[in-house]
Length: 394
Image (cartoon, rainbow, N blue to C red; front, side, top):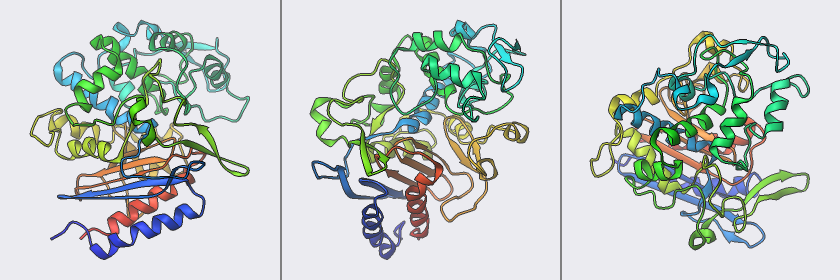
């Protein structure tokens, strides 16, 4: 039996065209994979002014969809014996030694106490190092203002300095919370990227090429788009008062050259599928080569955040009621929609990309667009596509 119902699959492409015609995005590539079937749907344009049609092999800015790959590389190094999950990272990241922690969220930068313990690799993987996105009204957090002034506040654009300078700036700031106390989004993955560089002596782009991209045949994945592929790179847009505005052009934009701090990949739907299939195969490549152990994959895809930590950790409204956090990605813990099977691993990126990998249904789904997100509602297209994917399963 086919993995998907043919009649329901037939309805996806016209649905996608209608949604894009409403102005939600310039274009999109969506993908469903199950058993031995892969279906790719492309609609809209990858560049509005040039009327360039979206294509199945269009290259997108993945932003936070890089997080699972960085996490996977870290788990590989744990399996190599290079580092343990509960090792203090200050051996390689001395900037994090003797951390100071704010007495309370609104405290001034010098109103601190000593960290109760060192930051560990596990803290970085689970975003519990004590620093990250600070959800506070403008003007109420001295630390949030200091992160923005130092250029280390999480955002959609590449950082204008390298890994060592990033760590110098991070090291000059106190933590917002004690290590292990709560989950704070994003910063842990950038610190982890620097840790991997110092652990291996290799730049992150070279490390991921060696350990993930090349073994999986991800030929269109990297940290910038070379000239010979720039015609397949989608223009990055944001929503302005008059509609879509260019945020990052394809040619001569931020991803048209090698970055100073590689921390956000560009990729295609087919390439990213290879990574997801490796996870659902328990860490093996299609030719049988083992990249990760089954236990390592299981750990990545298991909720690591305790109820007490969730109570201290704000993200979006209702997030922790239905979602946990593993290594580098979210885990569905409660079904509250058609496309939300408990145990499913996945995450999204700031330019409107998202993926899910469901080990129970053996389903992989991706929805890739090129419009900068402003709020959780901007992921409605991906959510509705994932619902359609589950509804089409035989």
